[in-house]
Length: 492
Image 1 (cartoon, rainbow, N blue to C red):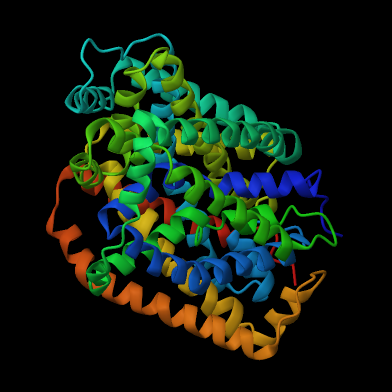
Image 2 (image 1 turned 180 degrees about the vertical axis):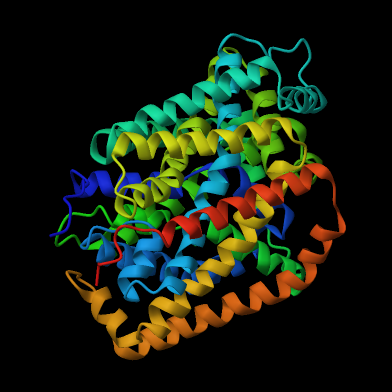
C-alpha cells in the first residue's frame, strides 16, 4: 500500500499555487524588456506560436505525468521516470536532471528574491529617496546594493527563513495558503500600478505601451528573436523544471488536471500581458521618453524594475509608498515561484528516500542557502547557473520529457492518460502532430542555440566560473547517486 501523501485542499488552491509557480519575476521584468528589445509587437508573433507549439503541450504533459505518478506516491521527476519505466536506472538517472534544475535555479533565484524584499523595505523607510530624480541615480543605487553588503545579506537570510517556514508547513497549510493570500494581493497591487503607470503625464504612459508593442517586422528575420520568444515561454510557464509535475502529484483524486493547467496558463498570461507589459515600460516612457526604452531594455531585465520604476514613483507624492508596493509585488511573485522550485527536491527526499517532511525541508533549504550565498559572494556565479540550469538544461529536459513520456512510453497510452478524468477529448492524430512539432522545434532550438552559445561560455574561464560549474556537477551527480539508492525500487 502506498504511503498517504498530502493533497491540495481545494481546486482553487491548486490553481492559485500553480499560477504562483508560473507567475514570477520573468512576467513582470523579463517579458517587457524582451518585447522592447526584440521587435515590439513583432516579438509577439514567435511568442504566440511558441505558446501554442511549446507552452501548452509541455505544460499539459507535466500535469499528466505528475498526476499519474502522484497516484503511486511519487512526485519528483526521478520517481516519475521510475513509475513510467519500471524503475529503470537509466530512466531514473535522466529524471534526476528534473530535480537538479529547480534546485540550481532556486540557488540564485532566492538571492534575487531577497533584493525585492530588501528594496521594498528600504523604499518604505525612504532609504532611496533622492534629491534629484534621474535614471543614473537609480542605476548606481542598484549596482551598489547588489554587492553583498550587510543589508543584502540580512534580507537574504530573512528570505531564506520565510521560505523555510512556509515549506515546513507543507502543501495545504503552507504553499496553498500563501498562494490564496498572495495571488489576490499581487493582482490588486498590479492592477493599481498598471493603471497608475498608463495614466502618468496625461496618459503618456499609454503611449509608451503602444510604443513598446509597435511592430518591427524585419526583426523576425533574426533567429535570435525566435530563440528569445521560446525562452520566454519556458520562463513564464516554468517548463522543463519538474515543478508543475511535483504540484500535479499532490492533486486530489479525480481532479481534472487539464482544466487546472489551462486555468494556470490563462492566469499567467493575464499577468504577463496585462500587468507585466503595462507597468515598467510605460512608466519609463512617461518620465524618460522614448529614447530610454532601448537603453533600459539593453541594460537587462532587472534594470527596468530596479531603475525605471523607483525613479518614476519617487518623483510623485508618497512615492516611497508606491515604491514599496512595487517591490513587494515583485517579492510576492518571487516567493510563490521559489516555493515551487523547492518542492521537487522535497518530494524526492520524502517519496524516494522516505525522509520525514521536516528533514526534507531542512536539507533542501540548507542546500539552496549554500547556492544563494555563493551567488552573493562569487562574481559570475549567478550568470553561470542561469546559463546552464535556467536556459540549456530547461530545453534539454523538455526534449527528454517529450521523447520519453510521449514517444517511448507510447502516444496512445499518453493520450488515454491525458483524457482520464478530463473534459477534453483528444483525437489520436492531435497527439502525433502536436508533440511531433514541439519535439522537432525543441531539437532545432537546442541545436542552433548550442552552436552559438556554448562556445562563448567555455571561451570565458575563471576560478569563480569553475566554482559554479563544480557546484552544478556535484549537485547533478549527487542526486543521480541518491536516486539509484531509492527505497522505492519495488514500485512497479
